[in-house]
Length: 542
Image (tube, rainbow, N blue to C red):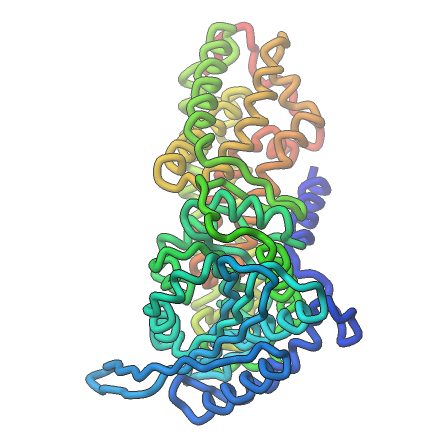
C-alpha cells in the first residue's frame, strides 16, 4: 500500500511540475524560455521602483523591444501623488501599450504585467518574468498566422506601491469599452508551476475555454476561494472592479525570494518562465480568435488532475451535497438494521477523528517549536539556503500526522469496527462538504468527489454478509484512495510551497482528516496482512 500511495503522490506532483524548457533554437512560432530570459537579465539588473531613474531605463528598453516587434507602442503618462509615512510623493506613472493588430473588429484581448519593482530588489520574478513572457509571446505571435482580435500588451507602472498604473489605466472609459478580457501575469515566488489562481465571477465560459487550450493546467477553484479571503491584490483586482472578465496567473514556490534583494535573475526558474509563456501564448492564440463580447456564464467548479482540467457547473454542488447526505443516512440506517454498526460505534469513530486532529496539531506545533528553538529553522529570514530543507520539514509534518493517526487507530480499534470507522470518516467529510457548499462552493470538490466513490463502495458492501470484507479488499482500498490522495496532494503542494513554514502546521490536521477517510488502508500499516473481522457482526458492536 505504501508503494501505491507514493506512486499516486509522485504522479500528481509530476503532472503539476512546470514543462520542459525550450531553448533559443526553438521554432519561431513557439515560446522559448531561453529567449525570454534575455529580457529578464536586462530588466532586473537593479531595483527599479516607480519614479526612479532605473525605472526610466527599463521603460526605454521595453519601448525599444516593442518597436522592434512592430507593436507600435505608446506611453500613457499620469501625474500621481501618494502620501506615505507623512511624506507626500509626486511622480509620473508611465503605462506602456503595444498592439498586435487582428483581422477583424471586436473586443480586445489584453495581456498584462507590471514592470516596476520594489525598492528592495531587482524584481526578476516580480515581475520581470511576466513582462519577458509577454514580449516573447508577442514575438511568437508575429511568427504565426494573424489573429482575429487585436491583442494589447499592457505593461503597467507603479503596481508595487498600490496598483497605481492599473488604476490609472482603468480610469480611462474608452479602455473599458474596448477590452473584452484580461490575462494578468504575476509572481509570489521564484519557481514552481504557473498557477491560474483567480478568475472573474461568472467564470463558466472562461474555465471551459481555458480547459480546452491550457497546455499544462495547474489550477483549481479551491485556490480561487482561498484567494478571495486573503488581503492580497494584483493589477487584475482593478480590472475586475471595472467589470472586465479576466484570468490571473502566478508562481508561488520559492516565496522566500519574494520582495527581497534575492529576487535576481540568478533565482529565476527557466521552467517556470516556460510555463508562464506557454500559458500566455496559448491564451493569446485561443482568445485571440474568440468573440469576447460576452464571456460570462454561471460559475464552475474546477481542478487539475493528471494534466487535464476537470470542471462542472457550480449549480451541481448543492444537489450533490444533499444526495451524499441522503446516501450516508441511508447507509447508516441499513447497517444499523443489519446489526453491523451502532450509533455508539460511529460516535466513537468521530471521537477518534477529533482526537487525531487535535493530537496531530499539537505534535506538529511542538515539532515546529523544537526546530525553531534549536535555531535551525528561521522561516522569517530571507535566506537562499535555509538550515532546514522545507521539503524535509513538510514531509516530517505528514509523517508525524500519520504516526499520531496510527496510534489513535490502535487505541480505538476495539471500540470501533471497520464499517463504523469508514462511516465516521465519511460523516466528517460530509460535515466539511456542507460547510464548503455553504461558504466556499469552489472547494467542495475536495470532499464531494471522494465521498462519491466511498458511497458506491459502501453501497456495494450492502449485498455482502460481512460488509467489511469488501472494504478490506485491495481493489476497493485502492479505488477509495485514488481521489483523496491525489486531490489532497495538490492541496498540500499549494500550501507547502506558497505559505510560510510556520503556517504548514495546519496541514497536520488536514492529513489527519484524510487518513480518517482511508481507514482500511491505514489498518494495513498496523498489520502486515489484511485485517480480520475483529467484531462479531451478529450483534450490535460497542
